[in-house]
Image 1 (cartoon, rainbow, N blue to C red):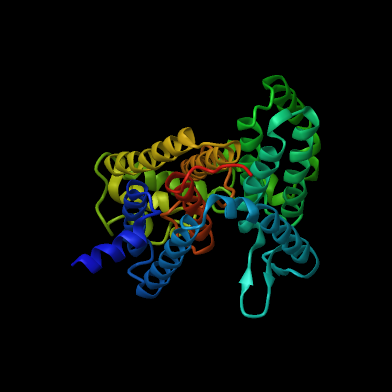
Image 2: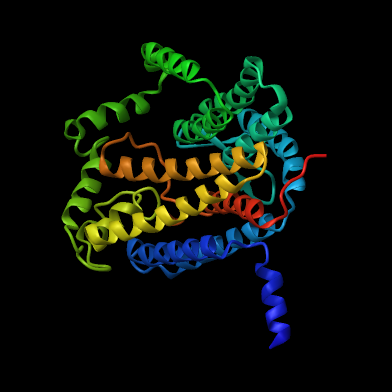
Length: 366
């Protein structure tokens, strides 16, 4: 009994028990909804369970890495991600008109997923090095660090991932103390450049914007996703139709129902009550992450934990927004619920960093 306790203590000493518990509950919900979304496809459920196990192991490993080591990984991880993105631009595989994957022999990888963590990590490290006397040129330098990979990802093209990565980098800039006057100026400049952005957008990206304004203009084409997901969410009512009883899901009206649109499946089957519970669970995760950020002892830990927390919020908002029809469809998974290994690993890697910040001795600069 004592030996078991020692082993358990060793395995969990750098894990945040509250955060881990809520993450596991959300993962369990994800498997339950996925079973219904796939029509009881055991193979897919098994693959997702393996994805979750791998992600949990990676989270545990990262949580056990001392903060000094995590800081040292920032620059190598960023450079590796940048090299891989250049590799995608030169040698990447083309699927559905997009060049996003890189074949490295044993498997295919999507380097843009790595940058979701590498960019805020690198920018937090950069600001930590210049913490004593931050000047405008330091913010400019950090912006260059952000724009290089974002432009490479836009070139693939992958607008959704580029926007999420840009958001994670912006959060670091904001938390590092970027002046509100500069932020307002940048927003004004962005608004003024919308005609230029529109002119260089791909046709399918323009169509997504137009579909957001009026999905009924092409109900069997570009507007199909939005219309069907809206029907599913609305038909769920207050209590939902019950697990595996959603007609939009079971009759295959919902597109991408195991990945990007799994929230519509959940809403149809569990209704407003289920959505409220899901949002409360997400709020518990966010609240715990905010507490970790508040207690962070250094500029580096505050910036990286704050960025990870706000990026997690952005994932939730964008996915639920696009499924509900209030945002364009950009292909963003619902965190810890949607099917997929890459996004699961990226998300739990971020939580592993937060756990390391919370459970390790406070970082002392040398």
